[in-house]
Image 1: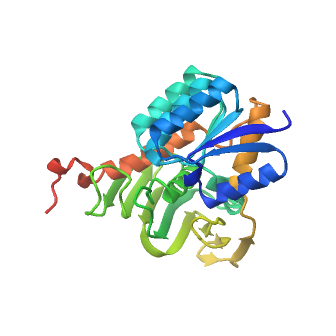
Image 2: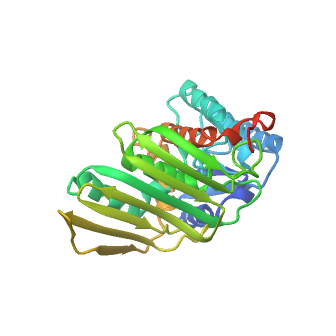
Length: 324
C-alpha cells in the first residue's frame, strides 16, 4: 500500500502538532487525508458510514469534541479500520470499557491513543538512565503540568496532564494509594477542573505528588525524580500546542552525602507526535509490530485520573457534597 487513505473525523479540533505532522506525511505522498470538520455526533457517524459504504478509506483518526470520541472510536473499530486518536484518554472509565470491548470483539485490531509525550527524546533519555540501575531505586516523584487557561470544553487534567500521569506511571508503575483535591468551583462532571492536587503511592512505597493547573499562567511541564543515588529532572516538552518550552533533562549522581557534578542535556526536536503517527502507519502495514502505547496504557492513565477526582468529596454529585 503506497498511499494510506485516512479520514480525520473532527479535524477542526485537531491540535497544531498533529496538523503539522499529518501535513508533512501528506507532502511526502505517504498518506491521503480526508478531513471532516464536524462537532456533531451524528454527522461524524454518517461520515464514517459513508466511508464504509464507499470503501473510501483505510484508517481513521478520531479527533473532534471530547464527548464524541468514544462513540466514534467504537464505530470505527467495528468497521475493522485501524484507529488513532490524538486524545490521551476518553472522558470516563465507562467510555473506555466500551472502546476496549469493541477492540477485543474485532481483533486483531489497531487502536492507538495519543500518549505521545512518552515518545519524546528527553523522556526516552530519562527512562534509559533510570533503567540502567546506576541511580538505584526510585523513591519519589513530583510533577507539575500547568497552562494559562484552557478551552471550556477541554480539560487540563484529561488533556496535557494526562500525558504527565502516563509518564509518572512509566517510571513508578501503578499507584495503589491516592488522595486528591480539586478546586471548589468545578462542575459535577469530571473534566471541568482548573486546579487539581494529588498525592500518590505505589505498592512498593514510591511517593508522588501531582499538580495539574489551568491557572499556572506560565506553561509548565515538569517531572522531578528522586532516586537512592541521584536525581533526574525533566523540564519542558517540545510541542506547539501548549508552549511548554524546550525539553531539558537535568541529572546528577550522589556519592554518600555529596552530589556530583550536575549535567544538563537539551533536546531540540519536536517529534513525539511524528513518531506516534509513524508507528501507527507502520502497524497498518504490519499488524505484528508492537504498539508505542496501548488501550491498557490509556485505561491505566484514565483510572488514575478518575481515582484522583474520586478521592475528593467534591467529586460526588452536587446534592451529596459536603463542603463547608
